[in-house]
Image (cartoon, rainbow, N blue to C red; front, side, top):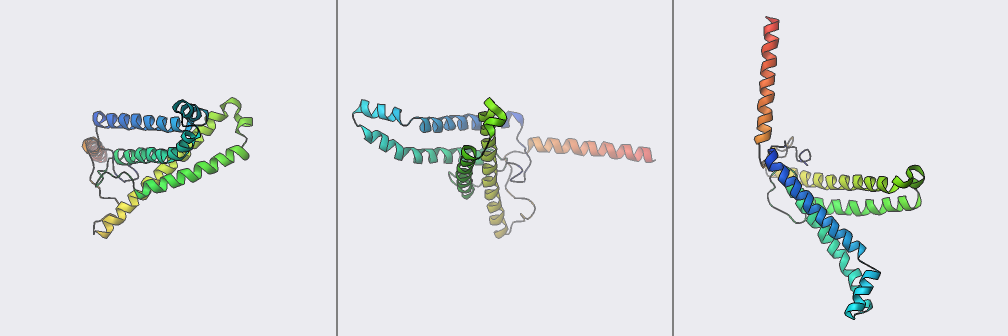
Length: 207
């Protein structure tokens, strides 16, 4: 994400690691919720409907409601990821952005196309045997990662366009302020020191 926003990672370890762990934890919990929503259907909702005395109405209602709920879960995951991952300080927290919409559309289309390919044209089971499921899942994660990065890049270029229209010099770098610069400042100081020592060594040998 830092490369997308053309900014160095300046957050020190003690500040960056908790953010990464928190984002990962929240994402895993929300993905688990989404998985449960997808699994809890058919016989499960039939059993709940019979227990509550509502019959097929529970199944019908669940089939309608679960898709908006899944959409909300995906939107929350992307909002947290796009806001917290880069070291760039966003102008404001957005629950939904154009980049997130683009990422969701790409992810939905790519997942459907990949599922169609795996079901009808692939030979992963013949090639990898019992590992086919793992290979397919890893490929799907790669597709997801590319969709998310494309959405983030879309948002970053929109931000560049807004800055250029406002007269800000963003041709080479997006001018969002960093959240923290302590780590990058320390790395820059060390690099400058190494360069200076290299220059002194060169001049001493040349003299």
